[in-house]
Image (tube, rainbow, N blue to C red; front, side, top):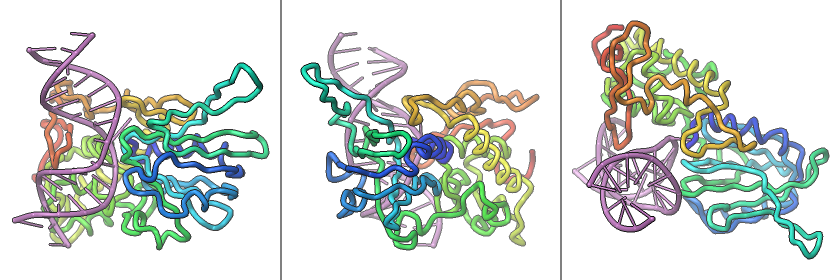
Amino acid sequence: MPELPEVETVRRGLAPWLEGALIVNARINRKDLRFPFPKGFVKALEGQRIESVGRRAKYLLIALSNGMTWLSHLGMTGSYRFAEFTFKDASRYYEPKVDEKHDHVVLTLEHPEHGRSHLIYADARRFGFMDIFKSEADCAYLKDLGPEPLSNAFNAQEMAGRFLGKKAPIKAALLDQRVVAGLGNIYVSEALHRAHIRPDCPAGALVAKDGKPSARLELLAQGVRTVLIEAIEAGGSTLRDFRNSDGGSGYFQHRFAVYDKEGEPCPTPLCQGTVERIVQSGRSSFFCPVCQHGPEERR
DNA sequence: CCACTAACCTGTAGGC
DNA sequence: TGCCTACAGGTTAGTG
């Protein structure tokens, strides 16, 4: 579900409550999500203090006092929330309200300022996954990731190097996490619209023969950056049931230019186009056939 | 190495 | 209301 802006929103929501907290207890309600939990996962968390809540691409990276890092990917439907409580009438006894069907991980936290809480990871489709590692080099999920799109390592020149000679459509190239890490189906459509590039344009067509990025590739690098920054500022996009850890929703979905806008007018000033939907490698792409162009250099 | 498909799961929206 | 199909923000494994 979540792309970089949604994961960053989750990170910002969790950090103040997690950083400094002691993991008193950890529990997993099944042995796998998308992949099996690594062996020793629960034991590696229990008794540790959380030092920081970070992010790389779409991965949450939680640094622990034992030097290990807990990695969490939300897949399509993963979410974190703090438990509500069920009070048992007969006594003062109460317990966190857990849905056995979709709540797969429960951590009991003790925070020096915020006190005790129960952090719950829910994931209906179980496309999410978790890992624990000592250094990033040991983590198969992280080692092939491309540059962070909001870092200086990501720019048109760098992309040009990867796209030179590539026949794959630009849509597929941008979804490839080895090219740039953190984009997904929504923000690829939005960035391509900003750069006036059709999603089915071959990636290599955006690079000159001498390996220099075209004007539209420069525009694309800028479009990727601005759409992500704007989406993070808006708290991400809420489709279906995405919730941040406060139970609130983002509002960037109200600013989509083309994503899920099939049949609606293109919002580019003076453009008379109508948004179209095509399917590429099994996934929807949305674009304006009037102001987004293929290999021919125009805008 | 590249490009494409299928698979992993469940929930929901829309058509009839 | 119910049934059936299509589709969903991601990633990996397998095929040619």
